[in-house]
Amino acid sequence: MVVRRIHTIPEDILSQKGEKIREINDEIKQIAKDLVDTLDVASKPEGAGLAANQIGVAKRICVVRNFFEDPTNSRRTIKEDFILINPKIVSESKETDIDWEGCLSVPNAYGEVERYQKIKVIAQDLSGDTIKFKAHGFFARVIQHEIDHLDGVLFTDRVIGKVLTEADLDRLFGATV
Image (cartoon, rainbow, N blue to C red; front, side, top):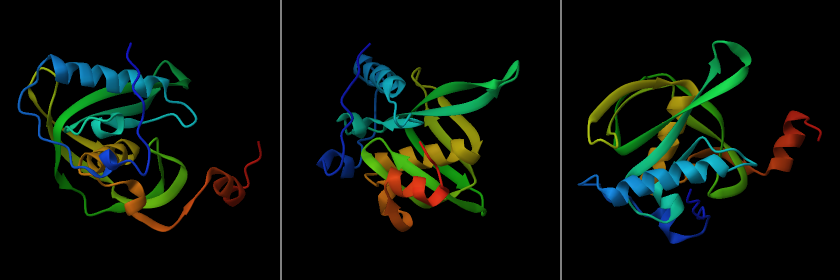
């Protein structure tokens, strides 16, 4: 298990556009494994995705995590990881929604971001096969957030209104710890 340091603002790597991957070799497979390992240990907050530039690699590869209810136990959540190489959104719904986002590379910052509700994605997997799939809801939001990273865009560049801290959010939603 290799856990890489997650780069945080204002590090330059976060504003760099990732280089297109031309060959899926051992180096790329190791980056994919490192992304998953690093995301697995991320807590407070738990991550839903991680792009290569967040671990210091300016290449177009990310891991996105889809969460869904365990059909045999409604109190348990299952997660499924997708490694996306050179991902591209090929179509999106006209419908959008605005919801709260945070980022492992922007600690203690949250903001409302408008995203498409449904998207169609094309990418390569670790075998080099082209994959096409549709995503909606939170999973679509995660994919859009990670593709933004690969383009050197942070969620804070898209925030509507103010960026808030966790304490601000707690006050806003009346949470007590």
